[in-house]
Amino acid sequence: MAKKENNLNANNPIGIFDSGIGGLTVAHAITKALPNEKIIYFGDTAHLPYGDKSPDSIKYYSIRIAQLLLQKKCKMIVIACNTASALAYETVKDFVGNQALVVNVIDPVVEEVTNAKKVKRIGVIATKGTVKSDLYAQKIKAVNEKLDVASLATPLLVGMIEEGFFNNKISRTIINDYLSRPKLSKIDSLILACTHFPLIKPEIEEYYKGKVNIVDSAGVVAKYVHDLLKKKKLLTTQKNPQHHFYVSDYTKSFEKSTKVFFRKKIKLEEAAIWK
Image (cartoon, rainbow, N blue to C red):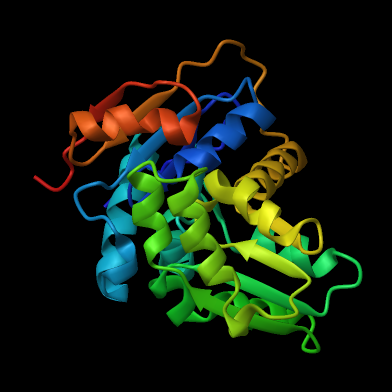
């Protein structure tokens, strides 16, 4: 178990984890919103994708990763994975206690979309695991039971994006097929409930032509992180942060594809916490 130390020092880093490298979209958005903050990222590439793992497995992985981030003195842990946010957030929060702040990617998005004006029917596209949890619908209706929520599993999109198929004819065909499904008819807002999906936001916007509000979780979570750290008086006063990016199973292909998600090349280090 992690030693019960309080990491709530403004100059300590922000920890971010995901089942792979898709959460780098959230990490990138956070570095843009908070350029002075140091980021420590962990991608559990040994176990991806989380979407087809059992809830107990995801909870176990998440606790072990949180333990690593606590050891690295993180003042905040951002669960940059919708499946882990849906299934393991409360478990991680209980484990971390008062050692660090814990943020998931669902609550900030729910807050954003339910505060919007003239919202009646909200669409959600996500992995099978996130859709099966039904957490977006539950949380949205807990805020406003009159809102209608339509959730659609879009399992082809993650693999498509990871293979670099976006902003082309192939991706447009797959995206348009999903968005034209009857389940998403007459929506006025669409939540991109997977951290891979900000990369295809332009294509989704092109499909809807401004008629649907597209909610990008990466940008929303970055703003939430900024506001929470400011509220807690935990914004760093240091400059020129040195970020660190870890994966549980290193391959050159993963390192090569990080540029897609983080918008610039980064170096991955292996943190083999499962070996």
